[in-house]
Length: 235
Ligand SMILES: [Fe+2]
Image 1: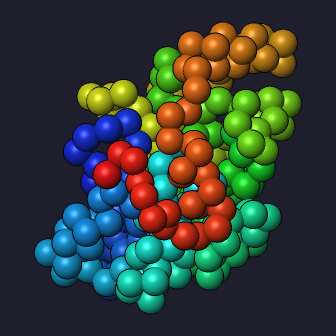
Image 2 (image 1 turned 120 degrees about the vertical axis):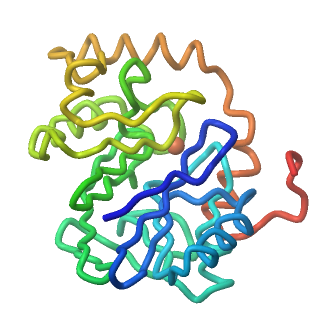
């Protein structure tokens, strides 16, 4: 599976995945603010968009998924237990979706949110806010439906995947390069922890530093109801 990260600014990452032979593609975690730019790139590359996938219900930006699904007729894909409206295809651990011959699988990893999932291809694992690169650790567990203990339990699942997979995360500081799962086992402090209490302390310290999520009051209801608000303060 071919992959390209599309966001040039900001901390949120959006991935375009595509199959070279069939020219079929999918967007993972598109941000509403950049929808026109994504569709322009897909068009320029001569790709057909089959689906938009949200790794979880985001609290920090409005997803582009339901807007793109409405505009293009592609599927909006999420984990089956999501509370978000507007989803057209619910997936579980048995689901396989395809771009040509390239397979896409899914794995439930609740914790950051209850509906968090991994998106798995032949070369990459897309982790959303379940796992970040190196010192980034993992996403916070103190937002709606977040559970520290569930996140800790979910982290064990990473051991079953090939260490060669590229870990493509939902957020990184500008300039951070994506690394393999092997690299992350050596450099991510959370993946090196063996005690839940250490993890709980790490979460408490990290969320205290992060503070309030600035866009949550607009972004979270928009994503849950699948509706763009009349006024978006940051656009
Ligand atoms: Fe998130």
